[in-house]
Image (cartoon, rainbow, N blue to C red; front, side, top):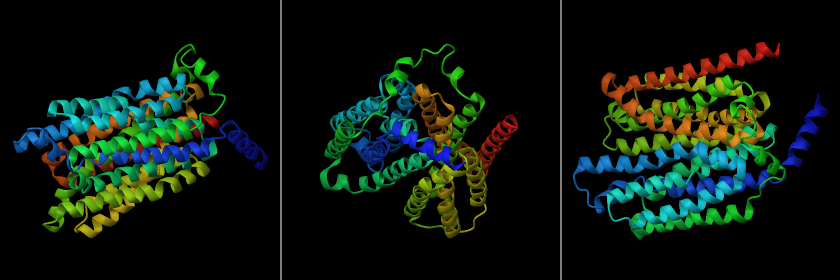
Length: 414
């Protein structure tokens, strides 16, 4: 039993001699690009005012449109970039994304109207996608027995960028001004472009796969093992982001209701950060566990735990209880996306990994956009605690679907 495993690992490493270096470059590149992308969150309304919008309602509306614009184009183009990566090489997609984002982020500092701001944000989403491209590259090149761990490390870099970005954005514009901040962002992403260009290496042996990409009769889904399971996993990634984003926008109001605090926004920010920190800590560790015991089992267990923890948040009576549960929820969520991605990667054909995972990225963006909208509707109609209950139901339904897939796979194996 031991020898074949050793041979498998040796073969995997031989086929992917640069996977560790690529993981390091992709993680650092994802961190820096996400910091640059998210640091505009604290001062976006202020920038909208500088561009001539003064009515408070219009400021909020335009800020939301500008922030969400890049997610729209990113969701639409993720499968395209994944398919092009399968055909022309995944490194080329990261080079394209980092250079395109460097240019687009710099252009944000030169817009003269709020319409131009939205247009350039659309361009950021169209040209960007570094972290999603990095996910595809790491998933495709990492040896199978280390894939969930590697994706967990990459996920930690992405989550850290999402945490550090808004924190940095809270004080950098006060030092250098809003418009120069975007130029600094472009420069930081350009460094990621240089590192990607000169340090990242495409694994040999992918040329033939790229030539054959898209030529197999019947399309990608004819090549996928257990297509039903892949569909469930893609839906799970969407539901996961949907559940997470449905809660975060109401945390501040929930804190106010629990503690009647005058500084509720600051406390809510800390709680959201604690959730992210829990995920950063858990992602590589849960990924390593998934590589040992099976990705599908870990997905089911984490979804069930997250559902129970989300339900418990509807029952808290003070902020301290909420804080503890948010950290535990972060731990449960941390390893989910890496495990889901690793499971999809193992079921997808090697020459179509980018296309299949690109669909997963689009599914995540759909959940990221729909979550806050429907969470707000539920809160308005049924109260804040109902949002946590609804989120718990979604997570537990996802756990049940994945459990059914696991049992079906076990039954067919017998």
